[in-house]
Length: 437
Ligand SMILES: Nc1ncnc2c1ncn2[C@@H]1O[C@H](COP(=O)(O)OP(=O)(O)OP(=O)(O)O)[C@@H](O)[C@H]1O
Ligand SMILES: [Mg+2]
Image: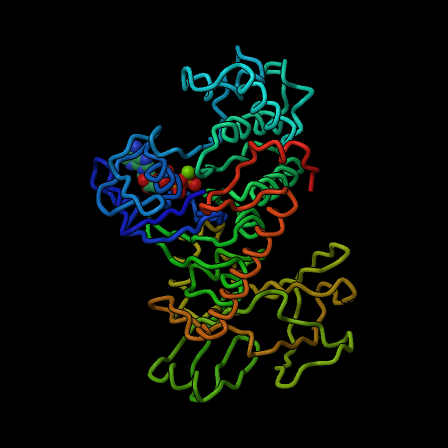
């Protein structure tokens, strides 16, 4: 078990380029932390600095309160699982998993090694494959062998760098749930790098969003989704992504491409002096009025021509083009580049109910609740509508959920805190008969 603290970490590679720029972050004991962001934002570099494979240019790294900047990787007792698994092709699965134990010469006898390997393999459902060679295994099985090697080491934390990116979509989904379950069951602090936001949202207790080496926001998935701090986070989290519409500010009204929206005096105050802003509306916030569902108070209605629809059974995407406002288009183009986008067309994506019968070419009756909309500063990207109170409420709830889940998992597995507050690890005989969750 381990608590990891990053303080103002900076990494400059040889050419002086800051790959990681002043990142500070506290990772709690037993927490599942995700590093996410577009390609080249510094995720791997940050992970490699923590594990000790990359020097820290400046800043401090603490593990359980101890500064470890100068500590060699093997002395940090962290287990890293790489994207390419780094398995030894000539060794059996058993020997691959046993490898780190054999490296610690003399510390483990054969019986001990056998017990640890079998315990890991049963947890990972590799029992039948122990005598096979990695080359004959599927991608998912190889992945599990790599994880087994991390498990037997009794490491203080697991570090993963895009461990599932080589797998096909189905297996990726399976492994994702497997990793989540195992992390909970073992209660091990985990840092996981991905650029896949589904992985980020489903696995993470908290998610750290990086852009060009700079930490943008670290929060629970729900807080990121509902209370993003800026345009970048808002655009990065969510599929299909949040719609960004240019809007003109006229006192207490925002003029969007389709409709005028009244705003609160509070928001109007924050926007005073601004001529134009960017309004963010998630695709599912817009509804089809013809379904006759009760509309909450204060909704705003508008009509718009749908030029394309995609019906998926349980839901339907509708695409609604609009005339872009020159004044913010450059900002939206730049944002698109930052998000590794494929070129945002000036169209709004609406995620309608599967019952909706709006067809291509139809003019639909639509509405949305303006209290859900976000308003961003086009220059700085700051979110004017972020509600700090709601955000901290979500953070509190997420932290409670995390602690409860960890507690439940530990109870289920018969793991307990002993007198010194030390976790009795999964090595104990009590964990051997553990049932799969
Ligand atoms: N050995 C190196 N020497 C110089 N620059 C490097 C080196 N490794 C990485 N960089 C630069 O540091 C930045 C961050 O790289 P990093 O590999 O951490 O990104 P990443 O977020 O993991 O990206 P990806 O999603 O593509 O894996 C990039 O701009 C990259 O070009
Ligand atoms: Mg990387």
